[in-house]
Amino acid sequence: MGCSSSLPDRSTGRLGGLNNSESGGVADAKNLRVKLVLLGDSGVGKSCIVLRFVRGQFDPTSKVTIGASFLSQTIALQDSTTIKFEIWDTAGQERYAALAPLYYRGAAVAVIVYDITSPETFNKAQYWVKELQKHGSPDIVMALVGWH
Ligand SMILES: Nc1nc2c(ncn2[C@@H]2O[C@H](COP(=O)(O)OP(=O)(O)OP(=O)(O)O)[C@@H](O)[C@H]2O)c(=O)[nH]1
Image (tube, rainbow, N blue to C red):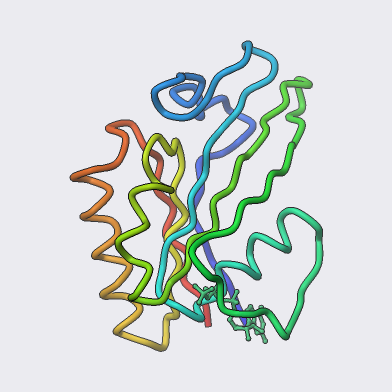
């Protein structure tokens, strides 16, 4: 698999807007809390991305997510600021789509994942971008991840 993504440079402080309780981030200037949600079609690798980020592991037998799952990961920046990511990994199957607002509400960051060989998954990614533009936090940071 290859993976490309575009995220703000985490060492430049461009995540400044995230330290805001309305967009899921609180605590003090040195210890930020960021709510992050993953969205995208079923099977595009969302759970694998989260598992890699949180535990450094890859599980090729990764199961379909039911509803959503929650994990967290804290990272330290060069200036010793810490960011605790509170991660909601949503289920991509259509039957769970109605639950998504529960998980993206108040999220400061959304990672939207698609498979670059599958137009349907890209359509779904576009759908999530529009949905978040309409109903997500106004200052949400979105990252589009293309997977293959
Ligand atoms: N070879 C390879 N397979 C991968 C990689 N990432 C994910 N997969 C496979 O892709 C399948 C789906 O991955 P998941 O992370 O469970 O997909 P998901 O987007 O969370 O799917 P839902 O839970 O249904 O929303 C699994 O069978 C993984 O083994 C990767 O980096 N390499």
